[in-house]
Length: 425
Ligand code: PMP
Image (tube, rainbow, N blue to C red):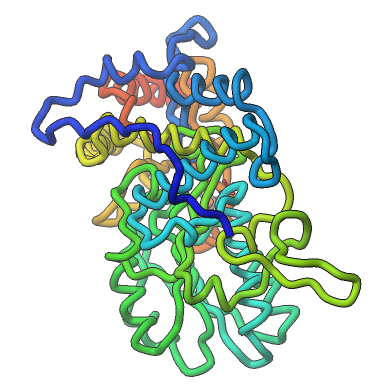
């Protein structure tokens, strides 16, 4: 069991007042990647739902670890190992505050959302799901929140049930109510759809599941970077996020779980660090969070996640969320006004994501032409093939915004879409 009691935390910068104007140009200065041209045009980075960019302070924090602190954690009694451990456990404390978890030990470091969901599938699912039981997911899940549950159902003879959605990309909550029953063992649902941008009413979904005594996993890969998340207020049992989508390096991420569940669950992987004692006859496991962190973790990346959280706090999360909302509304109005363009995903509550198709043009062609204009969007099924099947499109082009994007970039996107239409007319 790791004690974080004596860890000296780097002092977080206080949040600026909410009514201070959003100075996007000053924010952009924090992101070195944005200062480049692509195909002779200024880079317009609109692929934030895949991976967001990393501010200089996060780059510097990673470099400082490598230059001054690089060492393995938890096991060493020497100076560098203690410094690395302090920084790593300090990052866990920052995540705890960011998500408003009760205790830091409820925040398990993982490589990202995929690994976090697999951890719950193995640790909870393989222990508590049996033949004839049911697992509920939604019609708009990323493959990362479908395939592990399908594998579990196949292994156990359990059944995967799906909350349907309407044509706008909103979940049908009455049908969800009807799916819950005494065989339901877990509900796994995303907070914001990466393919459509829908913000799901997860608090309500959780409260309904809890009436049946069913725990809920929230896939927060898209929400943690774009909404203020409070796991105690949501009352979710598990919440997963990926660092590379929230301004931190790849290889960082968190699965939050209520201690009462994590303590009852099986470990995910076996190996060093996650044990209390090992003999050839029997191994006993360490307490939380170590029980779920076998082997040497991505130390530099997780410290980077802590630095990204400090950065988000310093710019003001509420202001960032409000600015992104305004930017998405602006871009949506602009792009939906272009003849021949159809927005895919028109839910009332949306964040960050603008998926669209152009009549008679394959989304890959859209992506290629936009790239020639220096504009980075994603084209494809976005690891959400069931969403594409449900909405009867083979793929979409997806622009996804962050707080460093500008209205001028939304205008550039609209102009480039008009060029695509011209090329294909
Ligand atoms: N869930 C959602 C909603 C996502 O958008 C993604 C990434 N596109 C994932 C899960 C998987 O995240 P990762 O690849 O970081 O594990």
